[in-house]
Amino acid sequence: MAIDYSQLIPNNVDLSSDRRLQRALENWQPRFLDWWKDMGPDGTSAFDVYLRTAISTDSNGWANFGYVKMPEYRWGIFLADRDPNREIAFGDNKGKPAWQDVPGELRSTLRRLIVTQGDTEPASVEQQRLLGKTAPSLYDLRNLFQINVEEGRHLWAMVYLLHAYFGRDGREEAEAMLERHSGDPDKPRILGAFNEATPDWLSFFMFTYFTDRDGKYQLASLAESGFDPLARSCRFMLTEEAHHMFVGETGVGRILQRTCELMKEHRTDDVRSLGGIDLPTIQKYLNFHFSVSLDLFGQEASTNAANYYTQGVKGRFLETRIDDDHLLVNANYEIDTVEDGRIVRKAVPALQALNERLRQDYIDDCAKGVLRWNKTIERAGIDFELSLPHRAFDRQIGAFAGMRVSPTGKVLSEAEWNAHKDHWLPTDEDRAYVTSLMGAAVTQPGKYAHWIAPPARGINNQPVDFEYVRFN
Ligand code: BYC
Image (cartoon, rainbow, N blue to C red; front, side, top):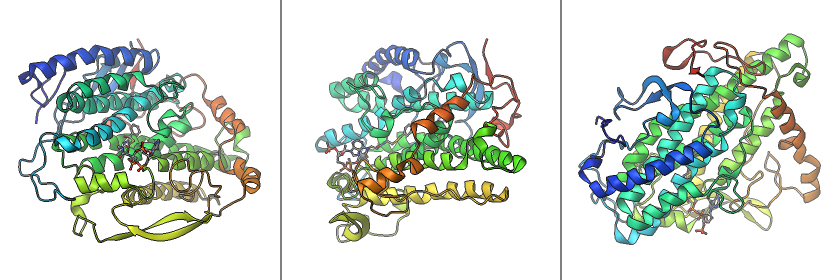
């Protein structure tokens, strides 16, 4: 479905046929732009950035490349095409036609999920707002900005739903989305990971690998929703999300490659003396970002999750491809939980375990990239393996919150934890070292900071020394 760009707000939802809604969103638009100016990428309004912009939601049109000044980016409302025969695939309403409007009894549940999803999008832009100052290359700078404008668009996706389907409450929630800020002590973002700082590029790549991947799994579950406009919004958002995780995986991969080159060339493990990021530090950052992202899936046993499913509001990952009754009333699922201070495996009603099931799908996916990273280390002939820490390691949400658990899953005393935690999580000194590498942005086409290898290929078949950002 082609996107109408003649409108103030580009869209494929026939916005001009609903003047009230159009006016309400046109009122929100300048507030969004003010927020972008204040909280978006710092000092970048004059840059021409080689960005992709969607011109239609099909496979030919969603990736259209050209130079754009970011404040002029055409943020808009793009839903995947409607399937007129779509049925709800799970829960008590299974087999009924997907809802084109919000069922009254599900109003507050749906609003809450949409607000939680929407809140993460501007949060990540806020977290990343200073990274451009220390970009390791034009290629990386452009990727950062691509992610930022698309997270902005994902906010638009959720704000459209709030305005179109939730009346005055929805409009108020849309305003509040621009009033909470990442890390703000008075008005923080809703979910923990989105109040953490992203102060350096190793953190950024870990965030886009691990935390954006939570986005993939949450969006995929919401793409199964019985509320069709939400499902269609999320389906299109997922298309864009893939690039964000690509940036994370290849970013960490390129740091590893550079580290291994330095180790081999100088026959030493002491990479810091050579201005690289040593492998143990990379493992510590991985541990931190993985466990913070695991928290985003909520409690292991959750009545909320059971209700979302039974009501047809939020499904499982690839729900329609799973071969079972899609009701789960009589099914069990095994989860790790805590009993008497020990981690035990236990069967619980499958409906309650849906957060944990999604978390497991996510962990399996995370592990694939770690295998690829390890291949890079192995190819260099270096004896070191990265690994995902145990799911109970350093958790703040769920059954393991507050427990002391090693990366291999051993329950520890407070004293044991204190004796080892600096080997497992980034210390102030590690963070200071990584930050010290983030010098002024590298702005010469084809040049890369010392601590990261160039990418294997450029964006949209452009060479790696292409002028991805023009500073004017
Ligand atoms: N932090 O029953 P539970 C993305 C609360 S990322 C703080 O497990 P539920 C992106 C919870 O609210 C994807 N609080 O809850 C990535 C509940 O509170 P109440 C974002 C938390 O609802 C990168 C209580 O604890 N999308 O897109 O089953 C860049 C009980 O918990 C947290 C979504 O998250 C937490 N981490 O599960 C840009 C999808 N976890 O009821 C973007 C929408 C739980 O006691 N959200 N709590 O007051 C959801 O599906 C659910 O809200 C959650 C939580 C899965 C997050």
